[in-house]
Image 1 (cartoon, rainbow, N blue to C red):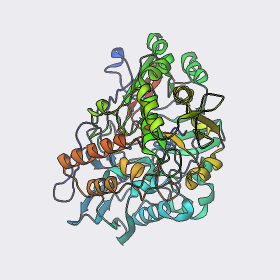
Image 2: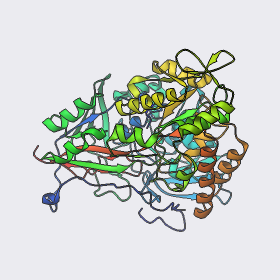
Image 3: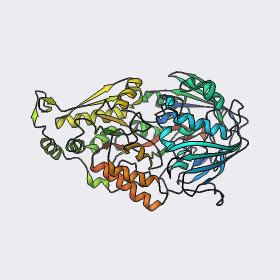
Length: 551
C-alpha cells in the first residue's frame, strides 16, 4: 500500500486556455480576522512538520506526492494551474498549440536563472524533459504526465517546441505539476546520480534553494533574494517573504501534532482525523483544509492472476467490504466513503455511481460460491481444489499512514468474514518496486493526486503498466476502457470529456478493477504567526506568498 501522493488572461492570439470548471478546492488562507489589513513582513523562519520523506527527492523519478509537495518552493513550472482548471503563464510567457495538437511552442521568459546562476532557456526545457523519459531515470509520476512526448526542438534560445506522438489534451495542465519542474542542466549533467538524495544537488529556478538535508530527519530551504518570476496570479512579486524553511520529518501523528501545538513547528501537515477536533479547539492554531483532487486511497486488484482474474471474485470483494462502517470507525465521521474512482473535487466526477455497488455480504457469498470457492478449511477460509482463497498485499510501511493501515486492516477483517484471507506484507521500497513491476501481488494500494481526470489513463490504460511508465495497479487490459481513454486524450471539449470520463468511472466500478476507500481532505494545523498560506490547485502548500510575524 503506497500513499501516494501544481489566470491571468493570456493573449488570445498566442495562447490557448483550457477551462475544466471548478475543481471544488477550498484553498483557504491562514490568518484570522484580526490579521486582516496587516502588512506582510519579510524575513523569519517557518518550521514545517512533514508526515513522511520522499521515496526520491528527484521529482522526475519519484512516485510519492510528498516529493512534489515539499519541492514546490524550489522548482518552478512552465505554467501555473488555477483552481478553476485554467492555465496561466509562469516560466513560459506565452505559447501556441498547433492545429493538429502535436506541438506546443513555448516562448520563455528571458530573465530566469537557476540558483547556481545557470540561465533558464529552451535548452534547459529539452534537457529536463529528455531526462524524464530517459529509461535510466525510471520515472514513475513525471513520465506519465508528459504523455506521448516525442522530443523538444530548440529553434532559438528562448523558444522551446515540444513535439508529441499523438494529441494529448492534458499536456498544458500536466506541465504545471511540480513533477515536471526544472533541474539546472549543470546539475543534470554533473550530479544526476545525486538528485534522489536531495540537498544541494537539487538546483531549481524557484524562490528557495535546497541548502541541506539530513536523511530521514530534515531538509532546509533558503530564500533567493534575486527571484523575480513568480507565477501569474501570485499575491506579490519579487523574492519570497520568508527567509528560511526548515522541514522536519515527523512520521508519527502524535509527534507532528505535538510539534505544532507546542510551537516547535509553525505548520504540521496531514493532521489525522482523530486530532482535528482538538486542533480546531486550540487557541493560536487554525486548520487549513482543502479537498484532495484525484483518487482516494484505492486498492487495485491484479486482474492478470488468480484469484482476481475472475470478475466474480472481484465483485465479491466489492460487496464484502462495509466501507461506510470502516471509514466512520477510522475517521470518526470526518471523511466520507468513496463512491467512484475519482474524488468529488475532481472534474468529471460521477456522483451517481453509489447506486452501482455497495456492502452486501450475502451477495459476496453467493458470488464466491458461483466462482467455485465453496469449501472451507479449518480456519474458515474458502478453498477450491485444495487451495485457500488468499490475496497478498505488499506495502512499504514508511509510505503508509496509520489511518491507511487501519483501513487495510478493516478490509482484511471484512474479507475474512466471507472467507478470503488477505495477507498484508511489509516490504522495503526496492522490493515493492520490483514486485509491482513484475506484477507479483494480488492487491496494491495507493492514492493519486491530480486535478485532471486524465489521471485515469495512467491508472487503467493497458499501455500504462507498472514498470512501463504507468501506474496501472490493477494490470487492466480492457479494450473498451482503452478506447474511451484514447478518445478523452484527444479532446478538449468539456461536455465530451465529462461523458467519456464518467463512462470510464462506470466501467471501472462495473468490472471491479479497484476498491476506492474514502474521500479525504488535506488538513494542516497552522500557528497564528503564519499568514498568507494557501493550497494550490494540486493541493500543495503555496509558500511563496506566505509570511511569518513575531520573528
